[in-house]
Length: 253
Figure 1 (spheres, rainbow, N blue to C red):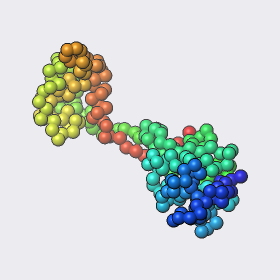
Figure 2 (tube, rainbow, N blue to C red; figure 1 turned 60 degrees about the horizontal axis):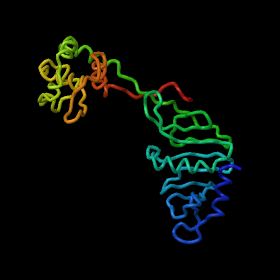
Figure 3 (cartoon, one colour; figure 1 turned 30 degrees about the vertical axis):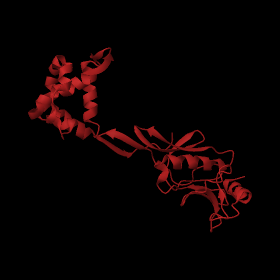
Figure 4 (cartoon, rainbow, N blue to C red; figure 1 turned 135 degrees about the vertical axis):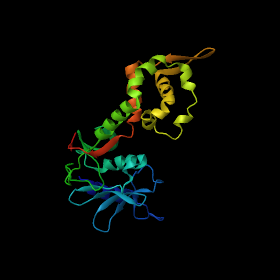
């Protein structure tokens, strides 16, 4: 029994007999009051699962099923309702839509049995759960090598790269509280790349070298990293916006 048949039977059994949704049926038969999530019969001999004004699932007589959230697949409520609606698929097909970090980038993923596909609106599956519309490659997040190379050159020219080890060695917790108006409105990479702002460098290092812990009856400061880890943390902060998102060559996981 395919989704089209299941939805038709569901509609016949649980149809609203009165009210503005007369002729439709609640998608969840146990929550008839949730009438924004309904099973309806289309005008084109299709069966549909509608959430508010969007037909998130369209089932065809031949067993094909189209998924289309009209861009709302980033909303958790839409994901929850869509996964509920997948329960109308044939018992031999398992579907689940969720967000997952793939190739260092959070993106919508459709699980079909034990395989993962990059989700996009308009994906269509046949009765056996095979995707019959073209697959889209997963997106990937990669550091912009040109930008990071330029940063390395700038840090060398400003003197920060050479001064780092010495500043790390002499930085104290008191440097964490240093007045930092020199950083106001300035991006971290720009501050570290500008020798005119060298008076802020020790503060930046101290805030990544120490952490404050409560020790009754007062706070104490302890080193949370060594010089290598401190440098890595500062560089990660500098490179936070130096990433590009592009299509990968991976279609199935």
